Length: 133
Image (tube, rainbow, N blue to C red):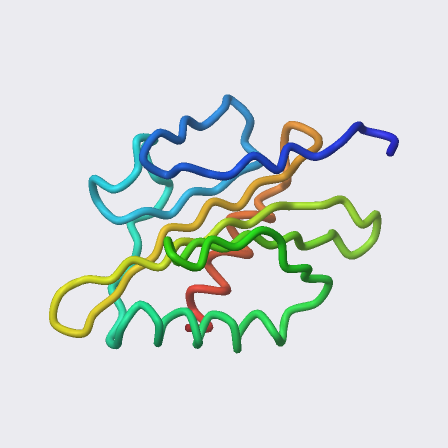
């Protein structure tokens, strides 16, 4: 491994602090994350389980995705997506959050493991995936 091992520590959205690098993108509902989110999470119709199923179907169409750790009880899942050319790994953690009245939202933290800038890749990925839901 040229750049060293990846940090695959489980994400705790309630205590997450963002580093000074620009190679990360955080989406959270208002007040859910300790860190200031780059974007407020949208609210979706349907249960958190419905949202998870839509997410899983959308991810099945994405290239170079690997499933990582999963905490079924917390509805939190980790994925690795590798860059097209060099195959650098980015980690994506998603947590599905049930709301009232058959509504749900999610928290997403997408980050690069190496380098300082990602040229907006993590933000573009997350925004495209949200649009696909």
